[in-house]
Image 1 (tube, helix red, strand yellow):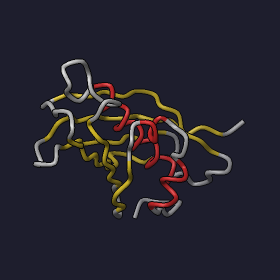
Image 2 (image 1 turned 60 degrees about the vertical axis):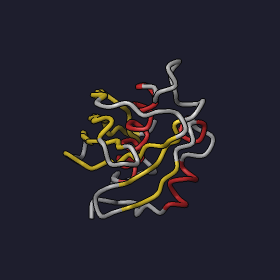
Image 3 (image 1 turned 135 degrees about the vertical axis):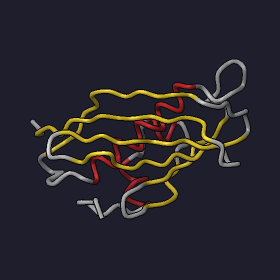
Length: 142
């Protein structure tokens, strides 16, 4: 197991309260030994003018999942924090309004100073929508 702070669904939802993730309707659904899953609705909050999932919403889901997973891997979360260094995303398929997507985050590297996470976002039918990679730095809190 990679988690230093053992996540629970309640903890993840409390951690994300009153943030962009709650505004976008992101809901954590599953915690594994080395992954987290969350859903996000494709609705008025997350679509572009063509009524398809906005690429920026996919990136927000990816960064949210990677950041929360990264925080749960900190050795000392009272004295450490994480900050994003780089995120990229490949948008592979569209998702129409009135649907939802499922994001899954898994580690590529969880180091003492750098973490790299891969996020896959799927439609309900399993078709891959987006592949993203997030690099975050572990920093000391000031």
